[in-house]
Length: 231
Image (cartoon, rainbow, N blue to C red; front, side, top):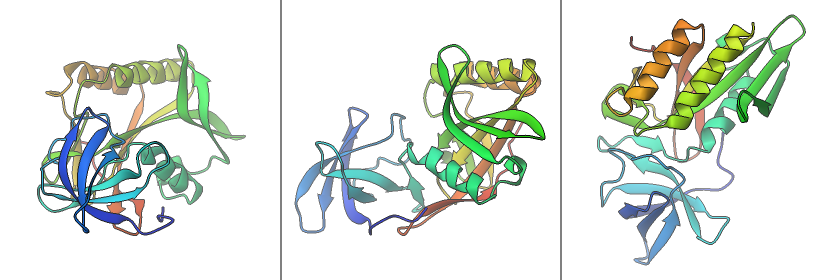
């Protein structure tokens, strides 16, 4: 996914109230920008670090897209991009485990009043229910981790995917790592023991888990390579 226009660099002053951050631009002005990430963003909110922004669409003039990690790596922080990155990868058959489906329908109702991120269908196979989770956490590079805070909604999605497997369908949890400095992935059980337990139960029930890392540059972000998932 290439950005439609060049990103603007700024220096992070502080991130607060989950969805707000104060930035200083090259000309010295300071503005509050939208932070499209509800997580703790551990290792990505150090005052003085570089950021990359795009023009905003709401009340704020700018939206935060890329953060500079403690180790200097570029990390995509916009959780809303994960589904767009997955959609692009599906169209271009970047993820071999998910090829062969001719329809990729987004936001299809399923489970207990939920919507699956993508329903993949083809005439010669069972439907595949695909959930996407954005990953930005790496406390001990090159290890990527999810989640970085408690996510009851994420645990519910795992249970609903398990129900789809029980009904005879395929179900996949895809973790999209918006950083390219990681070589493997693990569930951060210390951040959310409930999610870790739900993940184990889901895999035992037949839910598949995939993890793919992205290439991240000022020009764009794209799913690039598969990461092994630690036990």
